[in-house]
Length: 204
Ligand SMILES: Cc1cc2nc3c(=O)[nH]c(=O)nc-3n(C[C@H](O)[C@H](O)[C@H](O)COP(=O)(O)O)c2cc1C
Image (cartoon, rainbow, N blue to C red; front, side, top):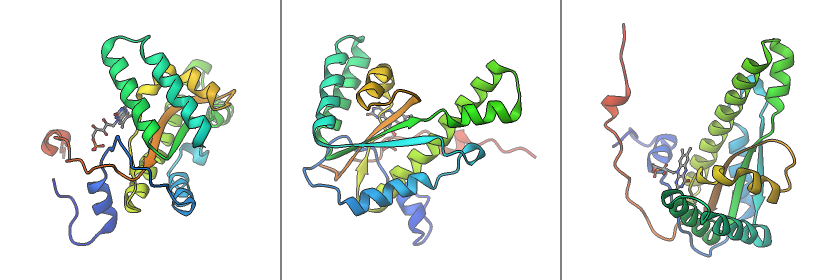
């Protein structure tokens, strides 16, 4: 599908970004990494709380994450185990991996500010934190694509979220996603997307 009219580079990057699951050995320059993290941090966030944290892992900690995911995969039914093993391979091949966590800052801030009932406040602000971090991750993916870098958003590690956060040294907060980052080992075709017309309802 073509959304990019003319030379609008934002639309070109949105359109051409693909989930890439294997990477070359080429390292990601720190300058690019910082640009990508700053772009993520520019995302809109509920009550401007920026309730996200980006944990950048390379080397030993990344290898430990590969080991953890591989070891845990066998504890899950087949479909989940397959995806976890695929995720471990992606993490292994990427030179750098960004773990995204929600800090809980918005939950504390919002509950105090809005004075709504405790359970509703938790549900509401937790959802807003997830939505805010999702916006940050999408910025991250598109910024990476704009620099010729490849990514994949790994949600499957939610299944082992406590172990992942522990390995990252995070005592608090919520698991959000893991994003390997690097140069694509090979190009992939756009997967078949559901017809755009099915996604939009027009009302007057
Ligand atoms: C919330 C979320 C979770 C995802 N989790 C995984 C995952 O665990 N493993 C994986 O290989 N891809 C994962 N993906 C990537 C999707 O499979 C991918 O975006 C989709 O197939 C469309 O392909 P595209 O990104 O190239 O357009 C995830 C994407 C999102 C948004």
